[in-house]
Length: 86
Image (tube, rainbow, N blue to C red):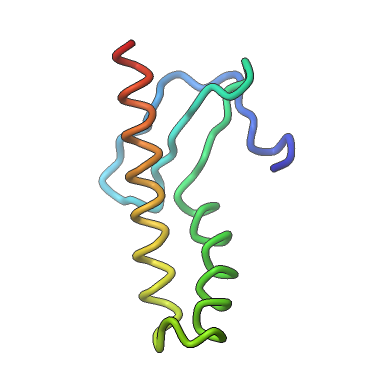
């Protein structure tokens, strides 16, 4: 991913807001802070869900994509919590 995903001025690991689309997770990767927003993740997952649809893995691209985005985002939050505990 490009430099647009790097946010060295982030104030916290997770910005808690009630709307999941407004959330982001900040992870440190190779010494750089990388911000992963839920909306960016949804855009990436759209391509994956299209491929899943074309391969016959799903009949509903949109709900499949939403489920995958939520799963990945929750996994990123778990990784951040585990790293934060160390």
